[in-house]
Structures are given as structure tokens and as C-alpha cells.
Length: 344
Image 1 (tube, rainbow, N blue to C red):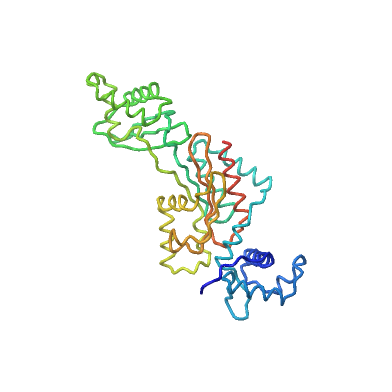
Image 2: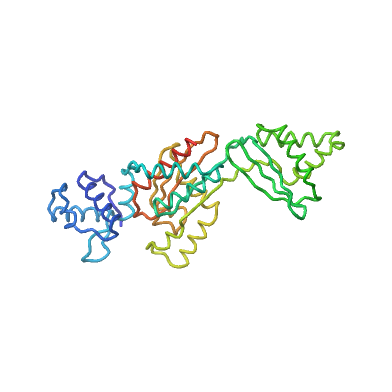
């Protein structure tokens, strides 16, 4: 069916948004008599029926059964989402977010907390991602010897990110040797960008005198395994995917499996955030119907925000859920967690 695409009148938009809100609250088709009982509307059931018929003709409403009321379509939800805004959270909700986020000492820990809090507050899928600063500065290196020539390399950077990596060396290094290497790097390169520090290490190793420097010889083993390599991969956490199981998304079992497989892939989730959260920093983005990202996401909505952190990194905070979600609360939760990130 081809729709005219005309602008809705003030009355049509008011009735449409009342239908959307009623459907969000109840999940049931909305009839003209239900709307006529609203005191502030002051319209007869007949007038409301005529407006609803026009809205149906324009593709904003659908009728599941002949005798049933109307339900909003994705077009209706998009129109509604374009006008809705967040409402201030209660003091208890704000205090909860603030106290929970302060429990995280590293950016990764706060990302994990944010996704969990979003899920608990909205009963939808909470997503949080940290996008590393491209010029991360070394704060501290820790090396821990493990069995079978393995070493745990822990790199903490000044943007509060911590990267752990286990590598297997060609020969074992003693605890004293690892301590000496750690001290050498921390004393000489603390505050340097990882890229510059690694380049300088490699330059020193290549010098002829490095053949007589035991520390640099030992450092060679770790540099060959990626010591101080800049890791630009976002850190992503997601909670609450199980909430999607109880939704009537009109998906076959195979399509539902495809959806969960997609959400399990970090690259897919990052691509989803990159594609649909293009608004200016701090501005909430709302996207209804995500079929362009994945066919099984056609009935889902993404609400999120990108914030700049004092460390120079970025964080993306988002909620993924059905079109029939409590938009105001989700927007407010996303905004509040974004502000808390900026303040930490």
C-alpha cells in the first residue's frame, strides 16, 4: 500500500500518540470508546473513529481483528519517538546509578555495571561500550609469571582502561626478571602513549648495544608477543538478552536463534551502535525498527547516547528492546548513566 505521506494535523497526532501510550501500557488494541473516556480529549467516539480510520489509511494504525480496536504500526512508533523526551528520574534511581557506578574502579568495570543497571531499570537489553582513546597513555605495566612459560601482561592506561593478555614465551622468565622488566618500562615510559613507548622500545632493542643489555634482551621476548601494542577494540558489555524471549516478535525459532547469535557477536553489537548512534555527543538517539542491521530486529527499538569522557575515551550507552517500551524512562536512564560517566 502506498501512503500519501501528508503531515498529520494536531488532532490526529494527539489521538495517535494517545493510542501509542495506551498500547504501551496495556499491550491491547485500543478502541475509540477507550479514548472518548479521557476527559481532556472531549471528542465523541464517532469523531475519534473517523480520525482513527484516517490514521489507518495513512499506515499509522493496524486492526488485528475486524471487531478489535487498533494497534500502532512501526510508523506510529517512529512518529511518537520523534516527540517524546525523558522525565527526571526519582532521587532513589539517581542515587542508585551514582552509587553503583562508583563501585567500578576501571572503565571496563563501569561499562559492565552500566549495562546491568540499564537492564534492571528498563527490563530491556542494556548495552554499554567503551571506545578507547587512540592515543592511550601508559599508567602502569604489571607482569605475572604463570606456568609453562606463560606470562600475564596487564596494561593500565590513563583513560582508566585495563587490558589483560596471556602470552606464551619461547623461554621462561623468572619472577625477578619480570619484575626488572616491569620496573624498566614503568620508570622509563609512564605517561608515554603506547604507540610511542613501543616504538622507542623497539628502537632501543634494535641498537647494537642491546645485545649486551639483559633487560632489553628479555623485553624482546615480550615485544614479540605484542607488549604495549595499541588495542583499539571497543570493550562491550550487554545484559538482559533473555528479556527478548518473552516478547511476541513474530519470529520463527530459527530467526530467534539468528537474533541471539547476532547479539553474541561483539562486532555486530558495535556495528549496531555505530550505525544508529550518530547524533551529536550527549544527544539521545532513538531508532525504531532495526531491520537494516538484522532482519530479526525489525520490531526492535534502540535508544542510546554517546558521551565524551574526561580521559579522552568515549562511552556509548544504549537500551535495545521492543517498540512497545516505556520510552520516557528508558531515555532518562540512558541520559543519567551518560552524565554519571562524564562526571567520574
